[in-house]
Structures are given as structure tokens and as C-alpha cells.
Length: 329
Image 1 (cartoon, rainbow, N blue to C red):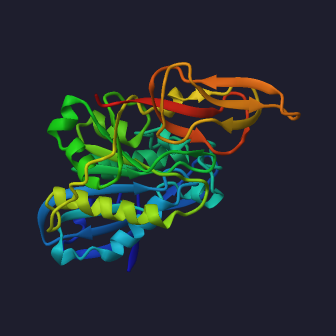
Image 2: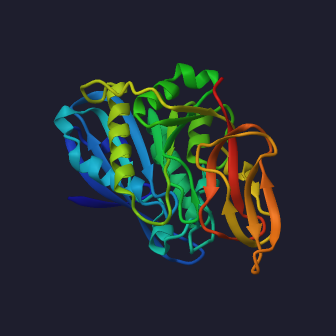
Image 3: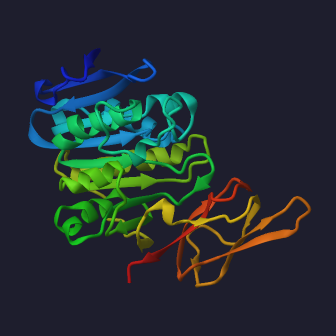
């Protein structure tokens, strides 16, 4: 059963307990008059408890988070749930339809405009709805990303490594998620869902996985298991969360804009593997020309661990190639 709501009529407090339902939020871009329906999956338990909000598909070329949320929604039983599960399997419907990171309606990246603007273009409106109607009312936020079409990252969970994140459970939940790599951040760039949550003191996690423009079912299972572990950690469902010790505990900015940009266009050949430990000035990759001529050597700016590699060989000047981050000492 599903229901349609406009912006002003949707109110989480009116969702009855012991229920499972899908609602669609009707939004419209004032500039193009293109209607957008934002799906929200809600499971409300039998007692008061935490509200967990999970975002998927913030970028339209990310497929693991949306499927994980849909399958979690089907799995969770309201009578066994303490609190409320809110899932947005497709947070950015225009980008999902196009299979792109930016919306084809206004060419904006949803992960750069939070908390958005109700009177702005459609991407601003989506961000504003998620911020004011969902994140403002939640107790914990998880944003399920993957690497998209051209770049790759290891499967990881990002968490708040500041003193606040230790107190509010962000790091504890990251450790319980059950993936081999966790990445702590003490600072965040503006415009992200998690940076908005952080600004109003809502604890958060996000995920990344290898991407490539297709669906990785193994990562879908990891995401589902990880979310259920967080729910156990938050006492939303019964059971013990994972106590797997991550192989890599990374620490750094986490901003993809900190990656090493190509200074020329050409054919990128990586010389290192994902999660390799590298030294300052170590060769990471080469950009070659049409006749195999060397156009650029890409070297590490500092000691650290490789956490992003461009997997699409064709690279244009200014595009990301590698990202090197630090480790917890």
C-alpha cells in the first residue's frame, strides 16, 4: 500500500505505530515544471525508540544502497522493531532515471547542496525535504553511497572521528557495521547530507563501495548486514552486532575534492592497488598519449593509503585520479 503526499501534508508524527508503508512525496521544479515523486519507505515499531534514516541513490549511478534499502524494508517486522526505520531507496529520482551523478533537470549534484532550498530548483528542493522533514526528525543517519561509474573505492564505512563522534556513537556504530575498512573524519565539507546532520548534532555514517556503473550483490548484502548491526547497536532490534576488527582504520578529510586531479587529458594507467600503503613522491600512475608517450607522472603528495583510484582509463584534465589518506596511529 502506498500513499501520495505533497510537501506540506507529510508529517512523520502522523504515521501510526506497528505499520509498514511506502509514501510518495510530490515535488515539482518551478523552473521546468517537471514533477518528481520521492519514495519514502517507513516501518514504525511497537514502542517508542530511535528513528534511523537511511539514504540511497543520492547519486543516480549508485545501485547498491537503493536495493539494500528495498530489501531491508521487506525484511523488517514492525512488531519486532523498537523505533522507526525510514528508507529513501531513490533519493534523487531524476539522476536515477538518467544514470548520472547530477540531475539532468538542473545539472546539480545532490551531495553538494544540503540543506537545500524549498524555493530553489529540484535538487535544492529534494535536499530541503530530506533535511527538514527527515534528518531534522531522526536520531541517526546512514547515507549509502558507492563509487559511481568512473572511480573505485574499497568497501568502507565513514564515521565522525571528532570527540563528538566518540560520544554520540558514530565510531561505535562504524566498528559494528562489519566491513574491513572504516574511515574517520574530523572535518566535513559543506553540502553533504552528513555535514547537515553533523551541524545539528545528529550522529551519522556513510558507506562507499567499488561502483563501476553496475550492481554488486555482495556489497548489497554487506550493506544490509551493516545496517542491521547498527540497528542492534541502537537497540532497535534484538541481537548482538558484529565485533569484527577492521583491517584498515583510516583517518583523513574524506573530501573527494582533495583527490589528485589530472593536469592533462589522456589514458590513465595506475601503478598501485587499492589500499596500498604508499610513500610521499611514490609513483601512483601515468597518463599516456595516443602513441604511448608519457604525458604526466602522478605521485603521492604524502605518506598514506590509497582509498580512491580512477578505473576509467580515459581521463580529462581536472578529473580525479587517486586519493591518498592517513591511518589511525
